[in-house]
Image 1 (tube, rainbow, N blue to C red):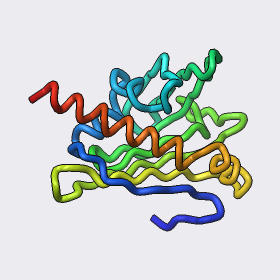
Image 2: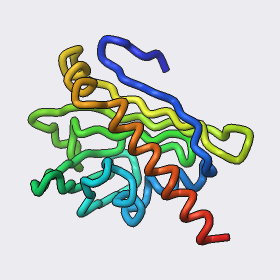
Image 3: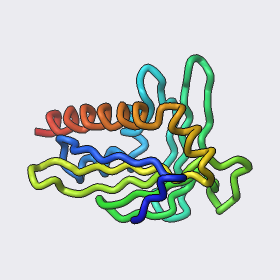
Image 4: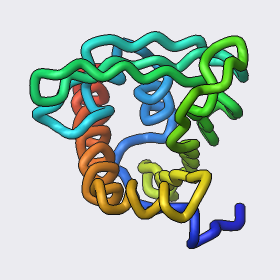
Length: 159
């Protein structure tokens, strides 16, 4: 995938948890609330229909305010790639003010962990800059840290 530095933000990190478990965390509404938004903010609801065109809806509680997020999956490649966007809601209904498309790429790291790449694609350089200024790298980095810790805790419970 070719990144466009004018409209895309991305980072790659090694997570000390198996790829299958990272995938499970990202695709289960029971797991999403444990990592998907930087603490102390919370995911209060999550509704997933894991298929192309299926819904990926979340509700956040941020500083006492609820934020509804509706979106759809654009690509689902089990344990490899997950692409979702807020550009549409279920039924391919266009969003009035889309923000981004998220792409998550997962690879085995050769040591039992996961090479995790998160990319956010934006419709304009201005939207990209806004997301960067909001703290994309810190926020999505925190989510990756929370995801790693949560996946490790699941792995320990299952051992």
